[in-house]
Image (cartoon, protein in one colour):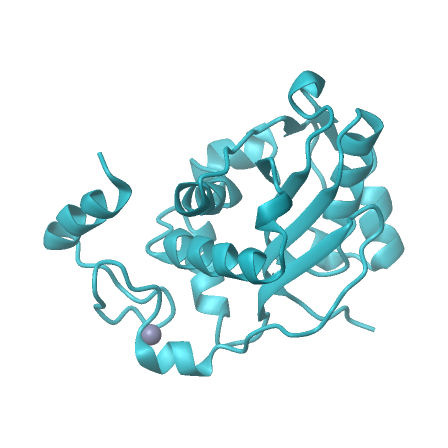
Length: 218
Ligand SMILES: [Zn+2]
């Protein structure tokens, strides 16, 4: 069934809500007008090792936090829809979508996947895919548990991710320009680690897009 028709029918039974304040909004809306006004659009620039171009939609602050929590709490609400559409627009404006062959959501470990029931970055990737007609390919998997990145400093983040991922289907990434999707990017070490593996297996350009960019704590 058509993505937007499905949303309209669902809306009749489970009205769409703003993922920040939980107000009821129209079926296709992302946020309510008040929250939309408060969200801070990211307009910085970040260089990430191994990533040819990076973009993000919002600064990670208290205004967007409730929607990020909702994305990860096992219900997801309207977060994936809202974030997917914002990323789709951002990567179009940045000239990334035009060069992207496949979208690759940052994977979760099997344990986290079981706990949550879904991979939140995959839900976002599917919305972008639907909007821009670019296929999603989950060609990387997370093969071991890692510490929560936010508890570590920059060096700790890098070593925490060493050998945490593997490319499970290198044929599908060979020669392809790949867009990595994550919810919150801080130092970019997750993107870096995956970009390194993909390039080693013959991928073309690697782009990274996250919903939010968080400041690196000094
Ligand atoms: Zn709201």
